[in-house]
Image: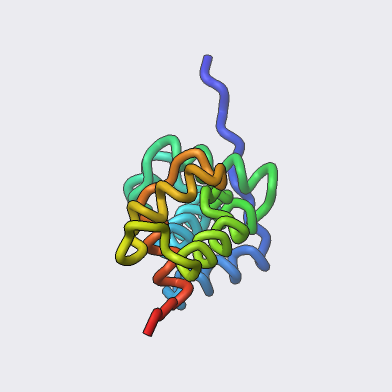
Length: 147
């Protein structure tokens, strides 16, 4: 015997807030989709009807409903922060790259190249490995001009 789904009962304040989000259309599209799905859930529509009307998957339907029931409206509408990879080029390394690029040239070199900066940074044990593109972006951001 299947378990009956718990209906979503939206208070009037939540309904007015959700309608404002959907009506304005100035929010992120994912937030508008979640608001539209919650409004349909509050009207008592079935899961299949909500999924087709809002254009969401089965897992999205259950995730939105669970987050609304346990954490509230704000958490159900917003995305959770994503961890991402931490930056390899820190502020101290940026300063080191900039100061190295502005320093005296090594013997036998006509100018600082990205490869030459890369080799010097690794030989000075500033970092284990860095790409030439990362060095280029740091120097572009520093807006260094030798002339």
